[in-house]
View 1 (cartoon, helix red, strand yellow):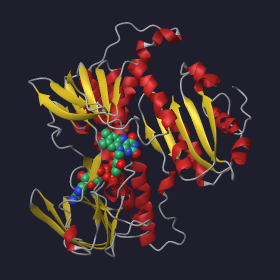
View 2: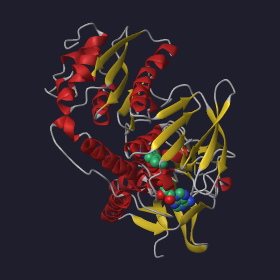
View 3: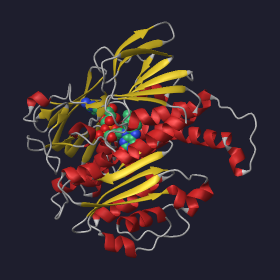
View 4: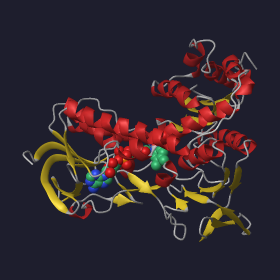
Length: 467
Ligand SMILES: Cc1cc2nc3c(=O)[nH]c(=O)nc-3n(C[C@H](O)[C@H](O)[C@H](O)COP(=O)(O)OP(=O)(O)OC[C@H]3O[C@@H](n4cnc5c(N)ncnc54)[C@H](O)[C@@H]3O)c2cc1C
């Protein structure tokens, strides 16, 4: 390799890493990205994007099966799983190529290999065990992401017990399936396989599914899933898996300690992710780790000067947009730009693309009360919105939580059609420290689902119109 000295070396080319690299290049730094497997990381290749492609097929399949409700007819509706998966993989491939193109356009050097720190400022790169390069970087950004967590005794085998990787490229459409964990990843797969016709059971250790979401919103989503025929067992844990040739018998222990068995074709383990911190040479530095992630401050600096950590490897929330944002903050601070905003994790939106969708930002009602806030809460149902009725999507809700004393918008929570697109309105509002007054004076276009955001705010102050 001709050039081995860089201003910034980024380890990992996922959304955290490649965005950091592009921003650093824009700021006139000499940048290299070391990526061992796939540009775009988990997000583009095995996470956000291919799941959304699968869910899109499921959504269209759902509408085709319900064509009659719209005065249309579609007979012989069926699907070809291989083609559904092929489309999802093609979408990932297209975007993976796009990242390569963007890095090239920004004159970022991309090195195919695995990076390992050899002390501050030094990175050894190998490929298939062979040395590729010894790099030096004034600044080294660790953006190595995360991988599926596995629980002892419940380890995925890739055949009968899947992680998200196998679930994204299923070779069969299981007739029955059990999903362990009801976080965003588990629920999205449960929703996909349910819509495509599988008999789906979800087991969640907490009482509430989608445990980080507002209680009321999660309860609403649960009701809808159960109405679709999904079986949800919450406050229960999976204690064992017995595998047969083509099925798995799952032991589930409920809150009272009573165990029952459920036999399914396939199991998906969706019990969270852990940071990729192993084999990174952290021991050659002062970098600290905590519960499987690298400890970094609000500007993503680790305890070793010149070494930074961003994205999933730097801890929760493990979301692509958080990784990207951290990449930008980290690099702008390195470049010495004035007024770099530190990472504010309280305003990061979260979206789950199940049917119905769930989206939120800020504090839940419960969290706000626990934080000692006096709150005003507004709610508006999809049933009261003209666009929702016209779309044939009358079920759902938008909830807003305000500080009763100051009118500050503390949180917004949604369940229903297209809410993953709506939430950003409230993210912007919170970012601008908007109060109820500003939101009430804002004009929302008609007819749109966004009018429900307005109505929810009006409801919090006893001024709701359409309810
Ligand atoms: C099924 C699923 C669905 C998801 N859906 C969403 C969603 O809808 N929205 C959302 O915001 N988030 C979603 N996520 C989470 C999202 O994928 C992650 O938050 C995001 O990818 C994190 O970006 P990152 O850059 O930190 O890490 P990653 O995307 O994991 O990228 C890390 C990269 O580093 C590389 N790497 C690791 N170690 C080394 C090394 N030593 N040397 C060189 N390269 C290395 C890896 O190969 C990888 O490409 C989903 C995740 C999964 C699994």
